[in-house]
Image (cartoon, rainbow, N blue to C red; front, side):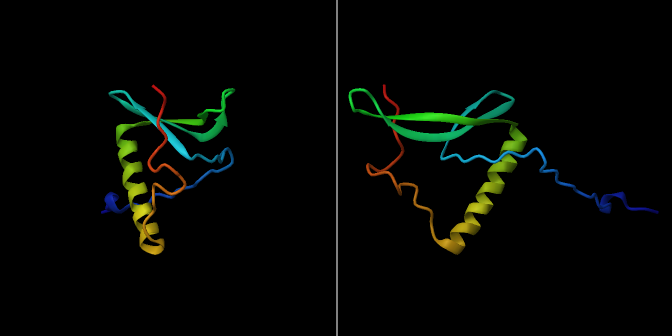
Length: 106
């Protein structure tokens, strides 16, 4: 009698259409069924009157169901915990002279 619960499944990863991009910020929105994540780069640019402004250049949008989003959150939490155990705590304020995250204009 075969025990199907212990059956091994082979996983093949196809990276032939993979695209790599860099993001230093994320914007999230939700629906009852999905989590929408826009990844991109915050770029400081001067305005004509020399006031600072950030441009959020969105390069990728990922839409996930809530189960997938929870699995992603758990996986990221584990990866970050392992990194900090080896390299020390990640300082979220590093690089921001004023401390904290950039604020959107009213």
